[in-house]
Length: 199
Image (cartoon, rainbow, N blue to C red; front, top):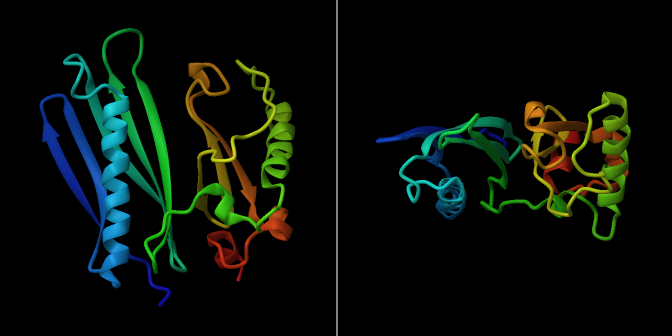
């Protein structure tokens, strides 16, 4: 069973809220479908809460999603939430979820690599070199990614990204670092989602 999962978009329209979110439908086993959908809904609700909706009556929210990978029993997607509460500009947060569609399990970054491998060090070195090359002025001195850094999988790449303001000023938005899976093939867990993209 290597088929992509079926995704349905649900829409919630309320005062100061325009929300589109995905749900996995007609998927077997049902336990996997339910696990993925529960994780998605929890993440969407957490974003709303983190953005101050509906606690702050001034907050206006637009939320949607993007599919990144839907093949080889891997589903990777990003949830976007833009909130404006007055001021010069609003703030967007983006959270990614990557699932094993056979079990419904959500992967953490560490699950992509062989146990004990220094994935933090390897990925951080690649990102450091790229930051230098791209000449982006940083708000903080970048030392290393967090062990649970935001990521998604797309086109045989592991994309590590940083939230707005996490590394650089607002104008730079999200910073993305696509890393070819072949560049880190020696530390990839073969039975993990990146391993599935290689075979």
